[in-house]
Length: 329
Image (spheres, rainbow, N blue to C red):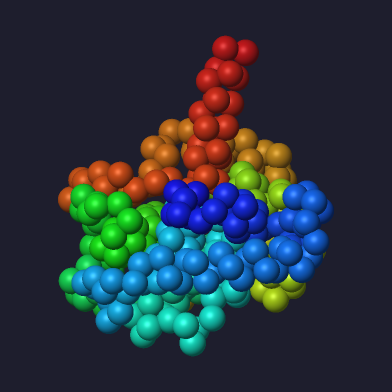
């Protein structure tokens, strides 16, 4: 993680492993350290990060002493690793932050929390949480939708110099804009006339990009990830596709586009023929679309060069490869 390159190698290695989701006990075992040494190394790393940039710069009331640490969190957000962000934030001490830094760190957490809501199929709550994150961005970067009165993030323009406070704000704005644009694409798609069958297929696509093809869904559980999932009340069978979960996801997507819409019936599941047939239809449809949904739905036809989430990229790669391989059979 480039944002941590100013740390000594041992401190950087321990902190990177923690951000990747490993527990302190696992870090101690793999690096042949005692638990006390791991805790001490993390404490020294945080102290060094807090003192990394003592000079005030524009954009904050005081200097972002957690700049390198926030760079690491933003890198995790860009990849879609919301778990790593929510775990790492528990080590941030609010009393050590300036008001501007606290606001920025809180906005990062809101974007990560919105990704969690996307993963569990609650897109309405994901949108509401992103609205809260957008409200914490500088006013010049957001606008009010005249029709729905939502707070929308403007399309990110070219990035400033790497490592500056403006760069951190731009990266956070870019990730939040990406998540908001994906949800807007879904809303527009579900506001168009759709069959119930199409709605369930779209729900399956979301399941593939957020859960089944997300690399962090299948990481071996650690003490930190287990504690996080317990705190978020993730079901024990999270990641395993089920009839009720996909019907709930499809219903929430319908109601996100039209709050007065009803639930998707279980008869649609039976009509499609179960998960295997549903996934085949979802893969075929996904392969016909660009990996970046915002390229199709942004009316200004811009390409802000925003990183694609790892789960979406993996799902799209698998879908296109599957369609190409089966085309000749």
